[in-house]
Length: 125
Image (cartoon, rainbow, N blue to C red; front, side):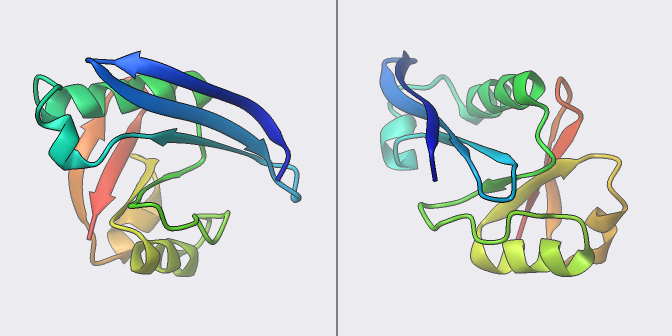
């Protein structure tokens, strides 16, 4: 995947990475890589601050969907059907999707966190 942009940044005294890749299907993929939670809890004020930062990123890039993962490749690059959503949830801890998506009720995942700036919601299995 061609790398469009890569940036290492300091946030709350820890290092985070932003990357953007151009996919073969014409879409772009943006990732935010955070340290493991064991490291984050020592430096961030709380979980809310992590979600607020992710909400700001999502508001800036207006994604179709996102994943909450632990390093696994994203896998499916679409989240347009219930089958797409289920495949993503089998592979990852959670999915971030538009709050208005009718797909959210078609899964066993639970709504975990609203991201008000971006209009997204985090679903965690």
